[in-house]
Structure formats: C-alpha cells, structure tokens
Length: 124
Image (cartoon, rainbow, N blue to C red; front, top):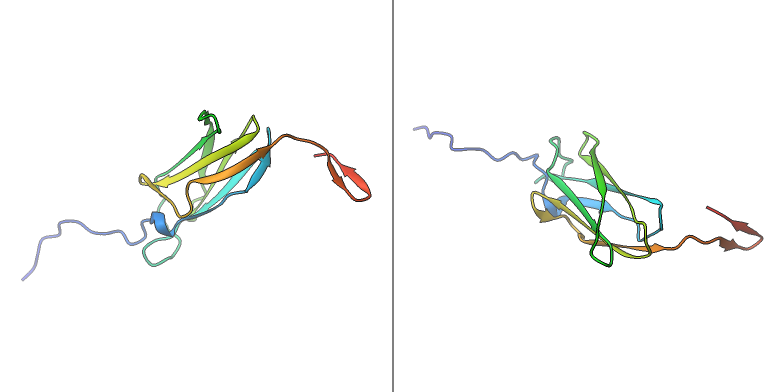
C-alpha cells in the first residue's frame, strides 16, 4: 500500500535554536559593528539553503538603527550596523520569526577617546 505525499521536511532547514551569532560586547560611536551568524540544521550541520533572517538593532532610546545582512552562501551570514550615539544597543536576530540562540544581544557603545597604553597613546 502506498500513501500520497502530503509534504516533506527539509532537514537542512536552519533551526533558530541551532543558529549562533558572534556579537561584540562593545563598540565605539560611529564604528561599524560586524556580526557573524552561522546556522545549522536538525543534524547540527551547516544549512545549505539560506535562512529567512531578520536583524533589528535599537538604541537605548528605542530608535531603530539601520542594519544590513549578507548571505555568504555557505550557511553563514554577515550583518553590520553603525551606532551613532553612546548607550546600549539591543540587537535581535530572528530566523523565521524566532530568536536565534542568545538573541537579543546587547552592545555597549562608548564615546571615542584616546586609549592610554603604557609607553604610548593610541588613537583609533
């Protein structure tokens, strides 16, 4: 006896709970923040198909900070944003409407100043 096919599960679909991001803990005002995202499927392998990612960044006042995301076509993604004021930025990364592991993330934004290192002053 055979049964009609009603649909199938794509096992290389990325799962939110298996997707991770590397997000810096702090940055400087006006400096580009780079975020690396890696998605994995049900078997914890890198997904072959692109996920439906959304990255939303908000300032401590609740203002949206524009961000971009690029599919690297290998199960990884690169996101970036620039915060133009000091404070805390909350970054939410979602796939198919669900937060990935560790999301939302907080990035502390500091005002630029010279860094004092013994023996020299370093300017960015």
